Length: 177
Image 1 (cartoon, rainbow, N blue to C red):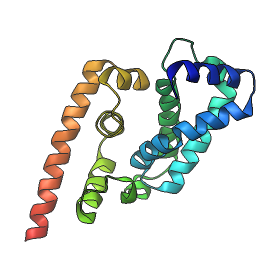
Image 2: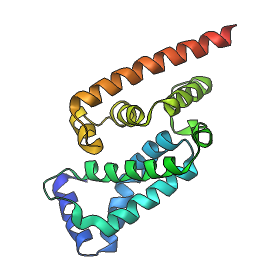
Image 3: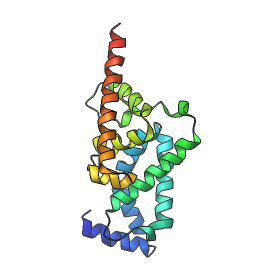
Image 4: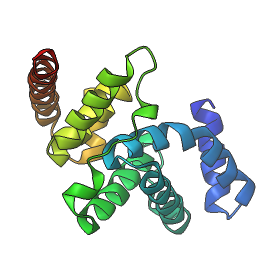
């Protein structure tokens, strides 16, 4: 969907056109699901977050500022929904991340280890890493989504990579013993 086409669809959403909401859903469902799975660890929780995201979008579409990037707005809603779910859960409940949504080119063991490592990152660091390194948003887009500075995003991504490298190297060393 091109930007001008997306603007038209958003305008139709503002007018209550359910077919336009369906177009938005079909366009963004998979990227949102991937992000939510990485943030929450369980596909069922991720689906709940997406459902909540689209409900909030439906109720609050008039809060979207014309001229802003819609994906930034939508991913901000998603992350808030994920944070709400995480606040309600005990940490032990979401450490089993669904490795099926990680890149296919990795071995099962590495995907599982990486999933565990991502799940153990602090929330802000995890969100920065997933949005930047996995979903491939720019630093500036991640900053807008999270409401932080671009420098904070860069720092969090850098620290996340350091922690993930250390955790994975420690994990693989433990397997060799």
